[in-house]
Amino acid sequence: MKKTVLIAVLILLGTCAFAQGGLLKGLGDKAKNAVGSQLGKAVSGSLGLGGNGSKESNASGEDYPEVALTYAQDLLDPEANENYLPLEDPADAPVYNSYLDALNARIALPASGSLNSAEALRAYGEKVARVRKATVDMCTRYALKQSDLTKQTMNGPSAGSSSGAENASNISAAEIMKAISDAGLNPATASEDQIRDVVAGYVAGKTGMSKEQAIEMMAKGAPEGAGENRMNQIEKELYAIYDARVMSSLNSAQNALAGLQAALLGGQTAADETTLDGALQALRTKILAAWPASEECKSVNKLEREQGPKSRPRQDEIIDKWNARQLDLWVAKISMFQEAEAADALKAAQLDAELDAMPESDKKTSDWASAKMKAVMLNGLILSCMEMPAKVFDCPLVHHAPEAID
Image (cartoon, rainbow, N blue to C red; front, side, top):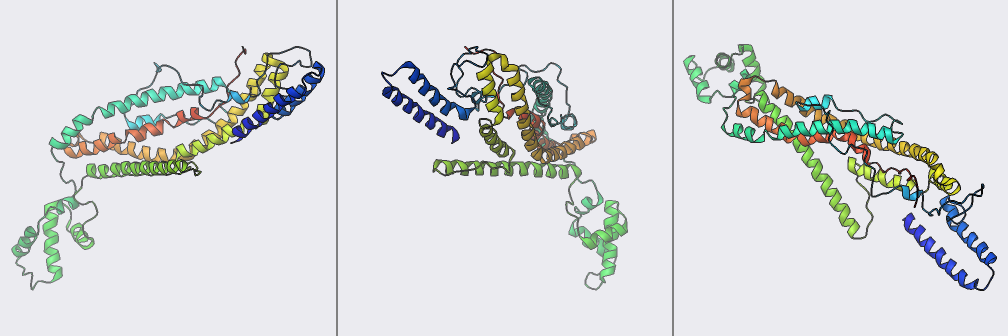
C-alpha cells in the first residue's frame, strides 16, 4: 500500500514538474534550475537522498553518477534472495543409518547476532547442506524398503501373543466351562469364590502367570491392548503420529483455501500464524515494509549520494547490521515451532529404533513389517525437522550494492 501511494505521489509531482516547465518557458536558465532543484528536494528528501536524487556535486566538488530515487530501497528484492547454500552437493556429507542417527546429529539454529555477514551466512549454509544431503540419502534408503515390507506384511508369519494377559484372551468360553465341570462344580449351585478359584487356576496353567495374577486380572478385566504384542503397539503409536500430521496438513490447507476465497471476494485476509509457514509469511511482510522506512535505508541513500561507490564498504556494514537483526527475529520465530516438530520426530525415531533392535525372529514377521511401514511413512516428518535450519535462508535480506553502477 505504501509503495502504491509513493508511486502515485511521484507521478503527481512529475505532472507538476511538466506543468511548471511550460509556465517557465522563456525564462532564464537560472530560474528554471532553481525551480527544478526545489521540486527535487520535495520528492527525494523523504527518501533520504537529498537534492533531486540525480547527479549532484558533493561537498568536495566531485560529481558522482546519477543516483536513483529508490537506490537503497531496491537493494531489498522481495522476489529473490541470494542463495547462501552451496550450488553442488557437499562431498563430505555424513552418513545416517537411521532416523535416530539423523536427529542426534541435527544442527542448532544460529545464535543471536551470529549471522552478521555474508561469510557467516555461507558458513552456516555449508553446515545445512551437509545435513540435508545426509538426511535425504537416509530417507531415500528408507523409502526403498517399502516394496519388501509390503510383501512381508502380506506373506510373513504372524508374531502371535507375547504375554500372559495376551494369551488369556485366546482362551475360549468352552474351555472355561470344561474346566469348571472337570473340577466337579455345578455352575448353578457353586459359589462365586469356588468358580473364580477354578477359573484362575486354569488360566494360570494356560498362560504361565501365577494364580494370584490371574485372579487380579479377572477382577480388573482384560487390560487395554490385550491380544497385542509390542510390534502392534508400536505400529499404533506411529500411526497416531502420522494421523495427527495428516490432520494438521488438512487444517492448514482449509485455512489457506478460506483465505484465498476471501481474497478473491475482495476481503482482507491475514496469514495463519498458528503454522510455521504462516508465521514466517507474516514476519516477511513486516520486514519488507520496515526497510524502506528505516534510518539505515536513509543512511545508505545518503552515503551513495554524497560519496558514491567509495562508500560501499560502509554501506555494507550498515546493511549487514540490519540483516542480522531481521535474521534474529526470523530465527526466533522458527524456534517457536521447532520444539513441537522435534518432539514428534524424536518419538517416531525412538520407536523406529526399538523396532530395529528387536530379535531377527521378530523382524521376519508380518507384525514387524507392518510397524516398520508406519515408520517409513513418517520420513516426511524427519525431513521437515531436519530442514528447519534451512528455513533461515528464507528471510528477506537487503543485498550489498554492486561494486559499480553503469
